[in-house]
Amino acid sequence: MPYPEMMVAPMRHELVQIGFQELRSAEQVNQAMDAMEGTVLVAVNSVCGCAAGIFRPAVMLALQGEKQPDHKVTVFAGQDLDATAEARKQLIGYPPSSPSIALLKDGDVVFMLERFQIEGRSAPAIADDLQAAFEAHC
Image: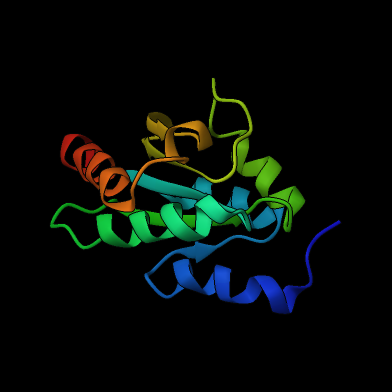
């Protein structure tokens, strides 16, 4: 059962305020992904503690660098179930994980951080990984 929207709204806003397009339905995911060329950063947001303390701060830090993906989209696991399931179809070869973040280039996953690669690490360390992926692929 999803959390009340008033509880998750600030968590959604953290990524939207830094330029992510929030996708809340399967239809929105399909329309967005079909329209995007180049690199797409897909953030699977979550209410868990590692999302608040590591994941979202790391994404914010990484996006302060010079190299940037062409597009940034986010879905919210446990909240927007259809959108999250549809976005995960783009992440071929990776099991469902939240939070997680993937960089796609021309529709293919070229970099992925799953929850087990996020938990227990620092936001700056995760940001460094993301920036390295941006340097290599964007």
